[in-house]
Length: 269
Image 1 (cartoon, rainbow, N blue to C red):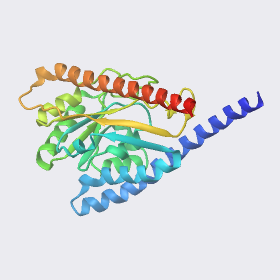
Image 2 (image 1 turned 180 degrees about the horizontal axis):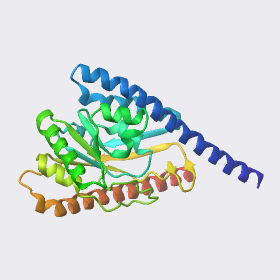
Image 3 (image 1 turned 120 degrees about the horizontal axis):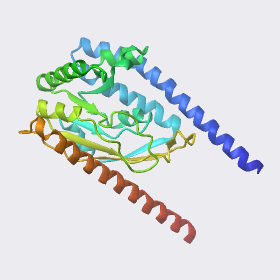
Image 4 (image 1 turned 60 degrees about the horizontal axis):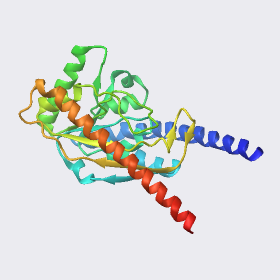
């Protein structure tokens, strides 16, 4: 019983220490991002600001929390310009962005983040597309600006079409918002779906568990939008979501098979 209590205590201590480490490193790298954004803007390369800041966050955070990634189809991240879409599970997605974020790409973010010290400064200076979800006209104007950047500067956009974190402990997706699909069609650029396998084995906030581990990521084939119009948005959204959900479930199934195989090997030894 004593060992069980100690085990639970150490698990919770590990959870809080790793979570606090992540938050501290977010602010530290955001400070670096402010400087990087200013310098890159001066030399005409601000489109690289979010990529270089993400890589810095990845480099310092992964060793600190024991997280690693297995990426399949990484070469498709070179598609430019494009609308990159990924499922959104938790705050840990910031590290995942550091691993897969393409060059010359900007994230979309809710407008309230703009006013957070350091993080908001970095996001503003680096070309983030801020969206005010409560103001339709403002959101449309933000997407119009993004379309212009994509056409004139070949700048891509990274979107979480679920619109919020799911915190799922199983392979699933929330319903998709339609704005990103309108954006891709207006700009006439392909959609590149990115599927991140369920990683509740690494971070599970409800269970207060944050363990080291490997997260599977798959970059799917680009989906063209040339010739599509606003009337195609619903069908396109459904198609992309179905593809991503199927891939998430496939990753989960593969993980179960690999886990079972590992257990059998251990027994045989």
